[in-house]
Length: 155
Image (cartoon, rainbow, N blue to C red):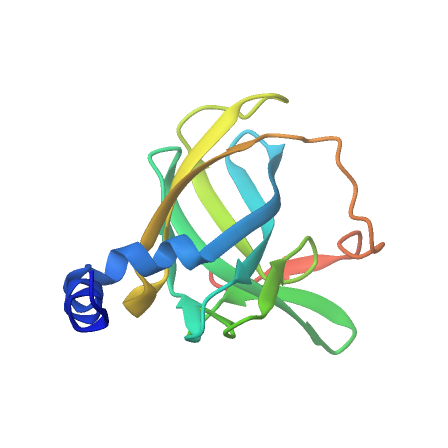
């Protein structure tokens, strides 16, 4: 097949296919109580175009959103991420306890260790990706973050 035909075919592939260039590593979910949970992972962009995680959805909770932590007057506060999370081309972005993460509010049922959490990640112009991750309520952060006092704004 010549290069011109290959270029035309590549242009016809829908944008959703480019989400395949976002690799998901070290993913897990946890729930501190029967009504809320969170998901953590490393998003690695193996492509040549910057991507952005702009949303997440799941039937596992009434609301699913992208959240950030920031310190205000010595207290860590959680808030919705206004612009999502940038994943630079050939770079990565970590979703971690005590940092950026995916928040689940109003769980449809309690999460037990070993359960699977199904969700769809929306990477905007880079497409969507459906994933299943395991619940590991006992897992502790490797970097020591995520154990401090947190106040959740607006919820």
